[in-house]
Amino acid sequence: MKDNNGKDVNWRLETGSPNALLRRDWTREAMKVGDHITVHAYRSKDTPNTAAARSVTMAGGRTLFGGQTDDNGPEK
Image (cartoon, rainbow, N blue to C red; front, top):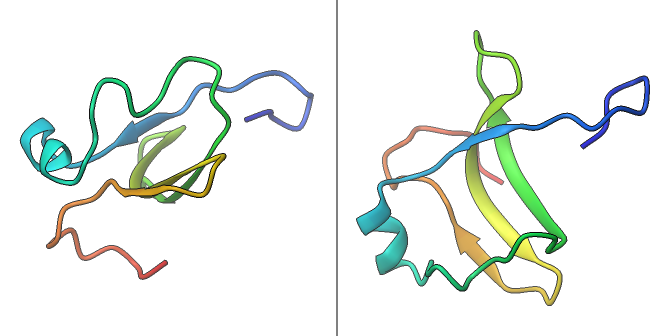
């Protein structure tokens, strides 16, 4: 993502536990560096450039759930 000045900004995306992600088809091969993805998330209230990832959609259309079932986040 880029900021208002056109500089790249790195974001920290929080997800469920590794075990929970693995049970939802997340594997080490699910994403590679350089892949174009769309992340549906909601921002942290008090930490800049941090968000809770609800889902990640790959370029091919495959969507992986990133949150916990009880994270009380907003619906998509």
